[in-house]
Length: 244
View 1 (cartoon, helix red, strand yellow):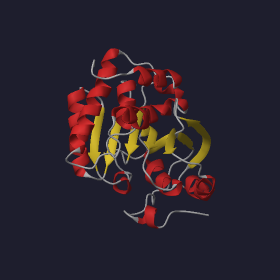
View 2 (cartoon, rainbow, N blue to C red):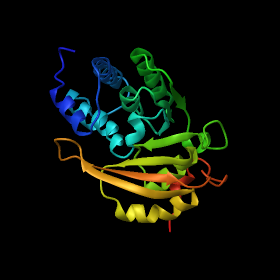
View 3 (tube, rainbow, N blue to C red):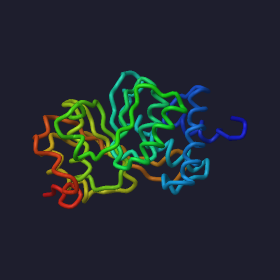
């Protein structure tokens, strides 16, 4: 711990607000060390400098609290679609141990990294699953099971909604992390969102603490069951998004 300066990280957490104890801080540091170590042999992130990882990955992930304040109070189930190196799912699990988390990614080598992080950090009630959203959201143990679905994946909102809304129970929420204003994209996605059983409930836009890094969280509420034909077969949601 003494080798790392956490002053800015703690300030940023206060502004969210998120409260961590020493054990949780140590887990974030170990996560960082594993990320950098594994990044030498596989492509996990272009961001490796300590303070940048804290801000652009950890604080960014934890900003979900601005859209879902009940994270602190309830034991919720959450699936992170296209989790990559574990963002936002693992930071959320560290900060909110009561969460039951599924990390879904289509690359098996990333799943090996995620399992190493889960093991080394001693995280419980969290699993890393190898597969595509189009396959796992078909009628199964995963479909319409989760209180919350999150994704930082880079895809348009229509495509992401088709990947993610089938996982969410009626009354639950899908939250898409975006890094720029997407009014046209959001307007074009309205048809897809409604067809898939969702409705845009809110959007939270802000700058990450003490930075000029803009973020927007689209909060989509699941109003009705997703029709069985969605998501369509692998590749189609990205190739032919449902649009107006």
